[in-house]
Length: 232
Image (cartoon, rainbow, N blue to C red):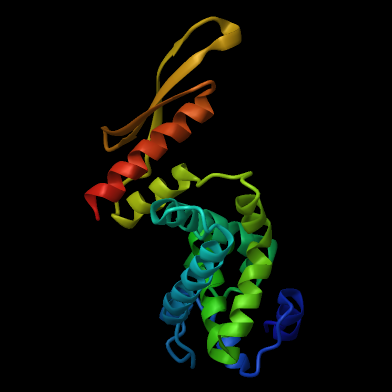
């Protein structure tokens, strides 16, 4: 049996309707293998939580960064609430511990899968919104995202273009992007690297930088801008 009181203590929340909290952790595989289970999966809550999260993040960034244009705000928001960030936050809250999974999903490492953790995070936000309204959901979201928001506010972070591109490509059911070092020029103490990002052999972007990591990030940025333009 899941100790839902322990779960709420860990999360720092107290649900009026515990059924909503429980539903936030029900993976579809559990429902598929337990046909008499009373609750639906967390997919609808995830849908709602995604919308609430995006609204709260948009509102916060709009107020905190009045000098930035819409395009940059869109990129920062997308990076802030991307799957990798959500999964990292969910992991820090140990959300995987409370997931209800089918046997196959359990055996395949479902409790630590980034997609499951990110979905649970969004479902939890959706459940909290339904249970206690936007104000409580907003406070929970801002508390969890405070470190990332602070880095953005102080200019110490940039959008994670590699994560943005990967999430976009995976959403199209295409293979994970790969990066290729094209060339490295200059003396050892001042090399310049050029990298490309490829999907199914197609080069989506090219970037340059003082390290492979920077070059890959710039290639991902070029790809992201191309994808944004081509998909409106």
